[in-house]
Length: 252
Image 1 (tube, rainbow, N blue to C red):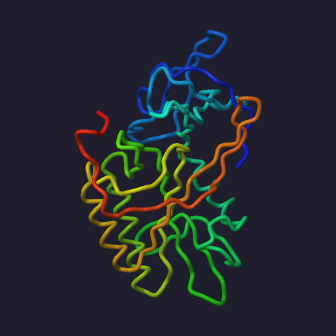
Image 2 (image 1 turned 90 degrees about the vertical axis):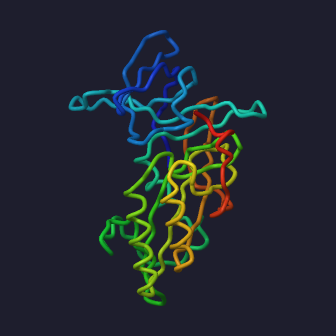
């Protein structure tokens, strides 16, 4: 998925969930829309460089949208993480159509937002030669100080509801897939965040035993002349359903 022209700045604060104060490189201060309703644990880091997109739509209250943040890693490298949760489905759809997700290749048609089993799931993939595949997408950006990625970053009752819906579909003979879209280039693998939402972690293990497939794919951010230009699903990542984070190592 290609970005519009992004503008850099420094994050000063995120507040009221949907607002972020950003200082642009020319010293001006702007208020950007923060398109992320979650806790943003580990990616809400004042003082880090962020990247904003601009809109000229006169009906918008805020012209700027916070897209990415640059995060220092323990090895001295920098990682890019997307805070724009609304882009995850577009990133995955592009990857599905390009055949990047090998486990979900060769389906003839794609449908967004399939209302089934008491919930609305992100995708339904159909082909006359096999059962339909129902896919729920979850964006992952939480990297704890143990170096691993986790989901969710806060208690998620909605996330558990999606897991139960996927399990119902699997029991009916359909393919049911939870796909973690890892939108943080420094995350090497994914596990359920039992230290933050033990009920979600327990439910994920249960539904996996009932036939729900759990996949994780990491994103690549393309950069040209120092400016991020695109974000794409690029590589399969390991998933551990049993790993426990050392709470003493977890960030506050």
